Amino acid sequence: MPQGKPEYVPDDGLTTRQRRNRPILAVHTGEMKGKSTAAFGMALRAWNQGWNIGVFQFVKSAKWRVGEEAAFRALDASGEGGRVEWHKMGEGWSWARKKGSEDDHAADAREGWAEIKRRLADERHDFYVLDEFTYPLHWGWIDTDDVVDTLLARQGRQHVVITGRRAPQRLLDAADLVAEMTKVRHPMDAGQKGQRGIEW
Amino acid sequence: MPQGKPEYVPDDGLTTRQRRNRPILAVHTGEMKGKSTAAFGMALRAWNQGWNIGVFQFVKSAKWRVGEEAAFRALDASGEGGRVEWHKMGEGWSWARKKGSEDDHAADAREGWAEIKRRLADERHDFYVLDEFTYPLHWGWIDTDDVVDTLLARQGRQHVVITGRRAPQRLLDAADLVAEMTKVRHPMDAGQKGQRGIEW
Image (cartoon, rainbow over all chains, first blue to last red; front, side, top):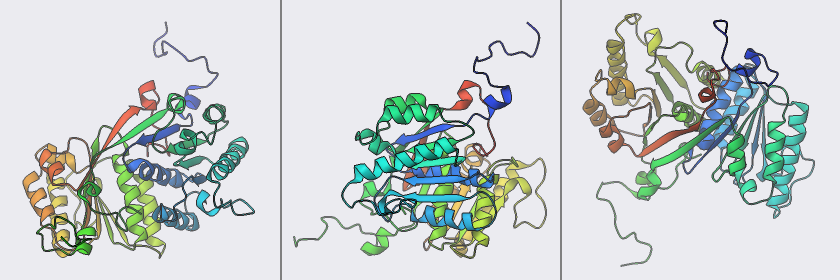
């Protein structure tokens, strides 16, 4: 065998460079809060590359991620780096014409996934954060097989980071990167309540 | 006992509100890369509170954290949120008059800690990121007892987040929050190299 040739070349029709820059599917799971925090930290690097970022928050609480949202809106407006779109289920999704139903979280979540599917097909963003997306999967509101098949078949250079507890095994199996955040000690264990600037 | 009174009130001279808003000492450790990423995610929330942020990077590589640094410089310049100072050991520390010695990393690290000590005494920042600070502690370049004593005695509302592998036990014992990032799977395991926008 000639020197410098790898022993095994995957039969995937990709050049070495394409394989090296393969878009990532990452899942941040575990019991600790850092899951989303680390996803938004990754998005800072994506922003610095000038990538187009889409954040989709599958949570209903108005307080969550306000700090991160304000920071990415400022980064989007800075005229440097990439553009950032931020969409929240809790406010009926930013792209939707009408507000989501107050009491049908499952329908809201499905509407969110349907939009993300359209955007993946259009290669709309370079970097997607699907925040707390594991819950509608875990609860059966969104079909995990459809999600995994869609993500594995996505075209172009679209990186996807999914956060949340209880990620379905099929999603973990499909991911290129799985990070588990483990809580060793947290001030809330000692009875301390969440505080501004630290928890939100 | 009257209703609504906690059974046990710590004898620390603090009001409930003061105890609730107690400044955090957090340590992000473990084998996974998310340690620093999550610390910078936390800093986004601090920024949104208008807090003054000081980042101290105890690493020598020019490529590390360029994305995060660019994002926080843009946030600092945005006129919203808090101010952000970013200091790198690799470039001789931004506050130092002369460049650090090329080959004395231990002296550079000690100089960094001496400056952080001065700033803690002056209550200069509300939120400190001491990135990869565990290494000079682990290697014995900086005295862990001095660090822990200084941090435990710090005045005012100064939050501190320390990142890096192999955090000394005394530091972990002193921390309010310890998060461990565990690698479950990483694309580099499959021979993929680090890529722009994802790793830096």
